[in-house]
Each structure stands twice: as structure tokens, then as C-alpha cells.
Length: 198
Image (tube, rainbow, N blue to C red; front, side, top):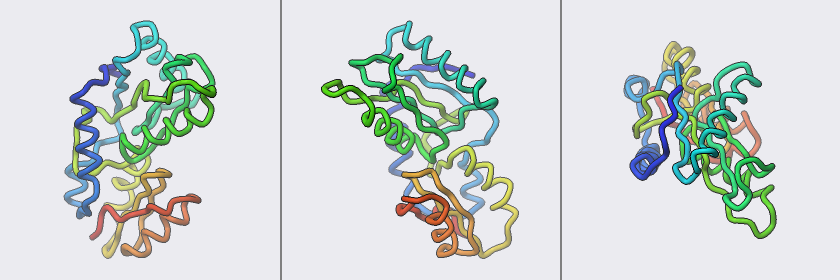
């Protein structure tokens, strides 16, 4: 696993990818832009000193040992700069559909438990698909696998829907069926939208 440092160029790529994600694609178009499920990269924040960067890398390695598998992209780990990374405020969010949604979930979880009066949480590290770059569509690790193994093989009409807020996803026999299944998958998935239609 590679460990590059998060930087300004990466942040701009994340923003571009999020803005581009609003369009609906065909399965052929989606297949051309989605990342595979073999391999990932951990990007550690340059705001951390060398010791904390090393601790973050080790934390992800230990987490993978605990779950007996990879930390699934898109994932983020957030911390409060005032508290440091070895506190209860260190929180993660895994298997989301984009960098932005993983960041938001991890930061919200961290802010909910950080000490009163401490600095708001920020991202310490991200887990990204290998070769990450901004693309018109991004899906979580599990959704990418489902697209490849189930959606592509399904007969048309079909649609694929996702929730950025919860990480939910669903395949349906059309847009309405996919949206309904996505919303039923997890409570609070009211932001479900169709991202692939055939």
C-alpha cells in the first residue's frame, strides 16, 4: 500500500470529482471511469508531523488486521488538532461513494465526541482506490464490486442508485425501483440518486 501526503492538488481533484458526480451515465460509460477493487492507497495529511503520520499509517495497518481485510475506499479518518490523533475523537468513515462523503462522515463523527472548546475536526488520512484521480463517477468499494458483478450482467431496463450521505446503493429494474431500493437499504438515505441507467 502506498502512503502519499495529502496536498493542494489532491484537494482540488477531490472537489472536481464531487462536482462532476451529478451526471447520469450508461453502464458502458460507468465501466470506463470506475476504479477496480484491487488495491488502494492511503493518503496522510501533511498537517501531521512525521511521528503522527507514521502513527496514522500504522493505525490503518492495524485496522486491516482487525477486520481481516482492506479498509474499503472511500474512507477518511478525522481528528481534532487540539486533541491529537491518539484520543477518542479520532473517528473514521469507510466504504463511502466519494472522498467528500467519507470526509463529511468522519468529521461529523469526530466533532460529535471531541472535547468542548477544542478545534473542529479535520481529515488526518484517506483511503482511496489505487491510481485515484478525479472522474465523472465514483462508487464505494462494495458498490463498485456490485456494479461489476451484478449490474453489468443484469438485463435492461436497469438502474443503479446511491446515497452519498449513508453509502447505500441499490440496483433496480429502472430508476424508480433503484431509488426505492436505495432508500429502503439504510435509514436516512433520503438523498438517493440514480447514477447509471440502461
